[in-house]
Image 1 (spheres, each protein chain N blue to C red):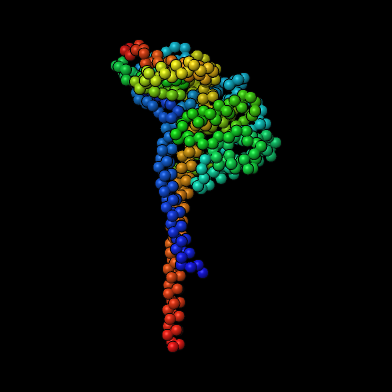
Image 2 (spheres, each protein chain N blue to C red):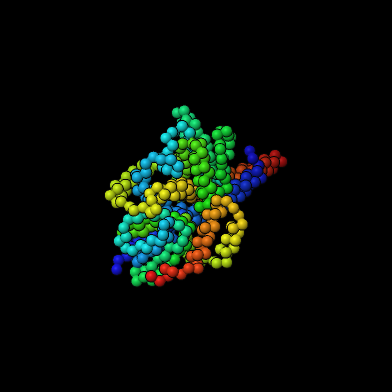
Length: 296
Length: 132
C-alpha cells in the first residue's frame, strides 16, 4: 500500500500536468481561430483558380512542356507521395493517422508494381518515414510555419515538385493530408496533385455552363494555361498546408481538452484514495492505542 | 448606368469585392478597360496597376499587382493576383533601394524581381488613368 506521502506527490504531479495541458489547450484554441481565418481567406482564390482552370482544361490537347501538368506524362509507373503532417506532437491521432494512411498507400501502390518515392512535409512524418523507408525519401520540408510565412513556404515545395516532374522523376503526385472539417474533426484525405484532376463531380455542371460560353484569350489560350498550371500547383499546396495547420490546432485542442479532463478525473480518484488511506491510518492507530490501553 | 461586380483576390485573402463602374487592368499585351457588359475575356496580367472606378468615373482605389490573371464576363470581373498592395501604401525610397540591391545581383529570379520592382516604381510615379 502506498504511503500518504507517495499519493500526495502523485496528486501534485498530475495537478501540474493538468495545468500544462489546459494551458496548451487554450493556446491551441487561439491559434486555431487564426489558422481557420487564414484557411478561409485563402479559399476564394483557390476556388476561382479552379473555375478558371476547369473552363480551360477541356480545351487543352495533350502536349509537351508545362501542359504536362494537366495531361500527365502518359505513364503511371513512378509515384511521389507527399504526406503533410505537423511539426509537433501532442495532438492526438493527427500525425499518426497521416503516417498510417501514407504507409498503407505506399504499400498498396508497391503491391501493384509501382515505384514510390516520398517527400514528407512536417517533422513528424519525416521522422516516421526516416525510420521505416529511409531510402525512398528524396526531399523533406520541415519547420514551415505556414501561418507566419504564408504563401512562400508553399512556393518552395511546389517549385521542388515541378523541378522533379519536368526532370521526369515521377509521373503522379499524391498529397496525403488532414482536411479540416471542424474544430474537433479532421479527415485524412488523398488528393492527386499532378497531373491535375479536373474530373470532380461538382465541376461537371460548371463545365456545361461554360461550354456554351466562349472566352477570348489574351495573349492566347496556351500562354495562359502555361502561367496558370504551375500557379495552381502552388495554390493547391498552399491550401493544403493551411488546412493541415488549422487541423493540427484543432486536433491539439481536442487532445489537450481530453487530457485535462482525464487529469481532473485522476486527481479526484487519487484524492479519494488519499483520504481513505489517511482514515485507515488513523483507525489503525486508534486500534493500537485502545488495545494498548486495554492490556494495561 | 449599370455596374459590374469586381473581385480582387490574392492567395492570402479577398482584397476587394464590390459593384463598380469601371476597372482598368494591366493585361499582358496592354491595358484593358472593363465596363459592364464587357465580352468574355481571359487574360494574364503583367505587373502594374489595377484601377477601380465608381459609376460616375471617380477613382475609388488603385492597387499594384505583381502579375496574375483576369477573368471577365459581362456581369463580373475577377482578378487573381499573386501579391496585391495599394498603390498609396508603396514607399518610393524603399523600392528604389530594392532596385539598387537587385541590380547588383544576377540570375533569372532577380530579373523577375527587378521588373516587378521597376513596375512598382512606375506605378507610383505615373498618374495617367487617375481621371478618365
